[in-house]
Length: 389
Image (cartoon, rainbow, N blue to C red; front, top):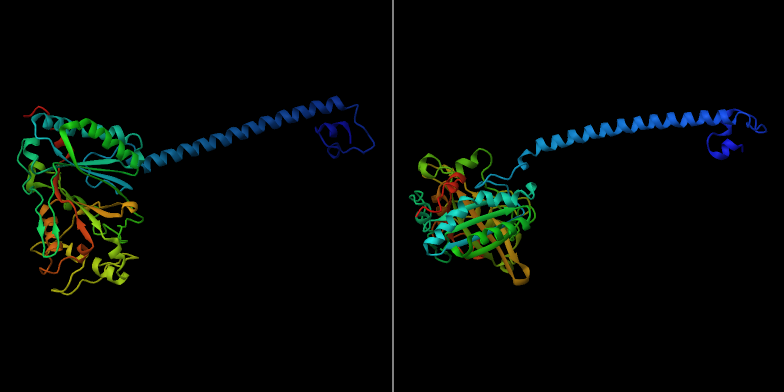
């Protein structure tokens, strides 16, 4: 092998020389030509890299612009008091009472009037986490807190006494429905909220919920299928001209149910499906029972007015519990434009339709709480004056 081959600059065949001839006389010329070749190759390679970099940069910019366009809803936090905020993986349901002293109401008004700022302080940390908080005000606290008349339908949760089961009524002045894709954001918001409220409130109930598989409850069935969608949501959920002073708000009812999972699992799948009114695996509706016969949960929870018009509510129920402590439950939360819709639903479930044929789901699910609130609009909360005594 010649010296150029040894140096790795150029191979012998490329010079087209016999193997016996050593190209020493032209070594300097060849080296110069080779150096020029490598310089040119480096220049061309640099241009290629630049073009590739520029192409990739342009593609990345396009991708980022596309992402920003398609995910524009994540550029800012979810609007405050959005009762139709997205379903999330985690939620906290916090119910408190207000201390019976003037200063406590001042503190609560101050916190509620800036609840949007508190929510932003947490939500901005991860805009993809769909953080949201909805505040509800109870009937007893409404006059002292807002200084205006109650919404027309707002009153304390009425206990419903059936022949076998009772929907209990429990206290609550404020509800904070806190939800996010991230449990830590719910935790952080609740921490800051309770620090701000201090001794002005007492915690009555705090329940942490989680999304279970494909939106199923701990009994194994899909929950929330009957929720309104699209344009039907505001008509079903938001108060309008019928109560103009609180238009844009919504009635909220919460109940905390615990399940006897062992007894429930002792039933066959067909028996469970008959109680719920849907197939367990694919969530397909079963036919309603004939009038006067035992109705399924699905049928009893379907509400019509005197004209036969069906009225929906918006549910954001969450499973909760701890296998270690043997607790398995569902936290029911329903938003409605018309409070009577939820109350009629509970009457049909606990008393039965016809009376005596109660919702058989209650044989395995016991309510521990029951409270009614009204969630006003964000503008309404902002208008609260801490010094309005």
